[in-house]
Amino acid sequence: MKQLYTFILALAVIAALRLPAHAQQPAPDSAAQDSPIASPYHVKAQFAGGIGFLSAGVGRSFFKDRLETDLFLGYLPESIGGDRITTTAIKITYVPVKALKYKAISWQPLRTGIQVSYTFGDEYFAFEPHDKYPKSYYGFSTALHGSILLGGQVDFARVNKLNRFAAYYEFGSSVEYIISYVQNPKYLGPGKIFNLALGVRMKL
Amino acid sequence: MQKTFKLLLVILTYFSASSCDDLFEYHPNQIRLDSDERNLTATNLERLQKQQPGDTLRLIVMGDTQRFYDDAVDFVKSANSRFQDIDFVIHQGDISDFGMTQEHKWVQDILKDLKWPYLTVVGNHDLLANGSKVYQQMYGPLNYSFTYGHTKFVMVDTNGREYSFNGKVPDINWLAKELAPQQGEVWQQAIVVSHVPPYDADFDRKLEASYHHALAQSNMVSLSLFGHIHNWNTDYLYDNKILYHGTTTVKNRGFTYLKVWEGGYDIRRIAY
Image (cartoon, rainbow over all chains, first blue to last red; front, side, top):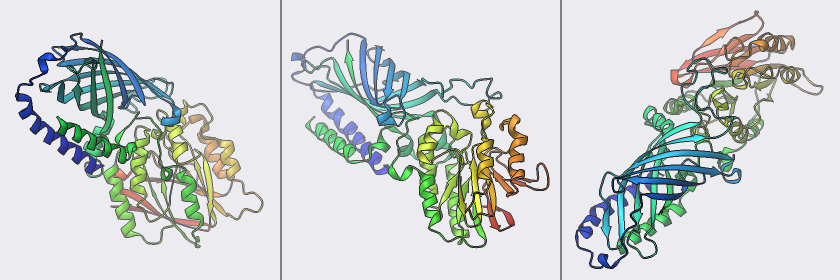
């Protein structure tokens, strides 16, 4: 796993270093393409990412796509997850660097986000039930999970017929895993606590 | 741009070739296990039954690994290097902190390096969220027993609080049955292993007396082991018949070296 992450990181760095040079050149045919969709509203479909095998989201972007908020509903079937789990999540994504444009494609090399998810079901508690536990017995929630997210997005904004679509990738780790890593730096590492999500966005 | 696409292709190929279990997590409470992470109780018992028990059994007792992975790694190193002739290791429960499968997988990844089989008892943290399902898929039944040489080991779920003190946990009837020798059985004594000790506030108060009574009444038990309190505690709690011995957590960097022979035992607290 460590090798894999080093490999991906290296690729991302190489790509980030090389692409701006290209991006600065004026793209000759960009004017001929469809203009990007201006709507701030979108829907998303996501694979993995701690909120189900598949999840669907609706959201809106602000400040010229610098900030995005999403509401997701995810489902994990028992055949895949060993247990049937339904989850909802709120995701807030901030794009700190400008998209790199190359021909008809824009690439956001860095997207940062936070996510709070809620798992449905009687066996999960958002807050410790007072009739079951003394005050602050565990000190954590089993239904609510916070996560931090790091990823990127390829936007097909000026590609004919695909101009509503973007594909994103996102490495996320829950607060529980991050605390575990901080307390166990020898055994745990970023490769063990970060997991990948893949998704598609469609502007409405 | 072509280069970027090539890179993307390489990345995708790399992903599909690597283990997706590590890369993608569908949910923190998913129960996705490799074949060597399933039915660990049965697997370890199988290993144990291949060994030849001597007159004196030598055990290591440890536990409460919850979120203390680095200390657990050091425990394995210490135990492996300081001891040669151990029969098996007992994990006193609270294997995980949040009841998540991933935590169990990490602990299994650490404990599989022990030179000996290890057996677990379920802790209250292991029952959080869908942890009961996780435990049963990964290890096996919540209550179970096995005989090794002259001694029967009875592993019992005593995490009453997790069941809202419903009067059914621990299962006293099951316990009493397990402690009554059946015809043809060769064991001479029993050791009852639990996570929560009977005097603890997390043990169902209604069952404290009947629990001890079941142990004492059987005339088979002179030692019971527990974890949970993150400290050492060795005490005849109720009478001078049964010694209750609590082993501290790996976080306090201690474990028990236990010798058991017919009619007796020797307990040593080991620091590492």
